[in-house]
Length: 246
Image: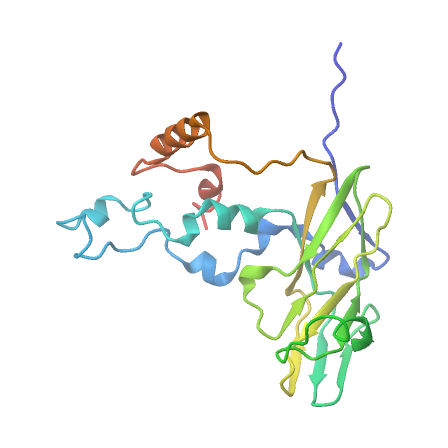
């Protein structure tokens, strides 16, 4: 008898019962509003090679697909989990200081001084030099050999701040606190509870052999055959199908 392999599981847990309605969820639950509203196809212009209004016959095909049907974008936005913000916060940025506070008992926030970052990193005029650290009330646990990439939910187009990306070995370390850089212009930023805050992408730690070389004839045949199969008017991949009902 073969032993059934267990599906790897990521576990998010918190001491605060009131946060359960704002729990981390698969990233596909947090598609940006602009993406949900976007059409899957655009009108082919008359100057393009398809005449006589053929673009209408090709709706939702590969010929006139928008980024909503781009497998790289859709797969990225569906990958991993999004942790929503667990409190309302106000972050006040001034020329010589930055101050942040939250609305509930989970809202622990502090500063990481510039000597940790910009004294050694190339200076950027766009961001305030001290980092704002948000203490995350959610902890996380993954199976042995798995880690988490912590980054911004990029396609939500957040312009006020950026999450400083990092990797945690979540099989042995379960905190995932969030360091951020805020734009340096004076402003009072309102961050609302429930907004997509961090994108968490699990990956299995393993070493891969590395090679960089010229294409072989076999490589060229492989790419040619793959291209031939994908060059269909009505080709869809799984990532595209996942957005059909949005």
